[in-house]
Image 1 (cartoon, rainbow, N blue to C red):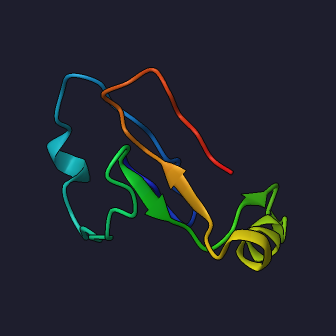
Image 2: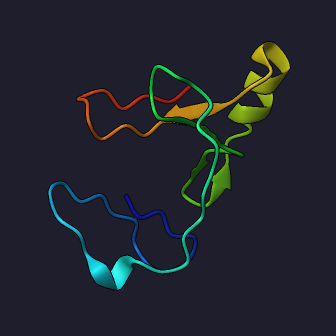
Image 3: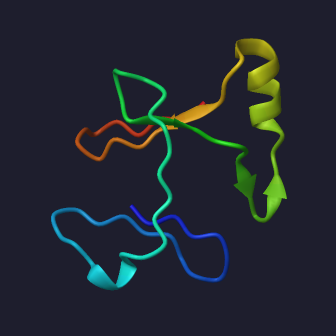
Length: 77
């Protein structure tokens, strides 16, 4: 999974390695033992912040998304 912040498109690959994408790694902590769930700052849709994570943090104390490509489940708040 390649998530870009800028002009390049994000992408996800299954079953292969694209070596040209292997640069500038960012490591994040896994927040759940059940899924590869990571904490996120915010959802941005069409370059506009949704403020959804702030709402969730007020209610639950966290905002995360599961990025486990080993299952058919992709989940967010």
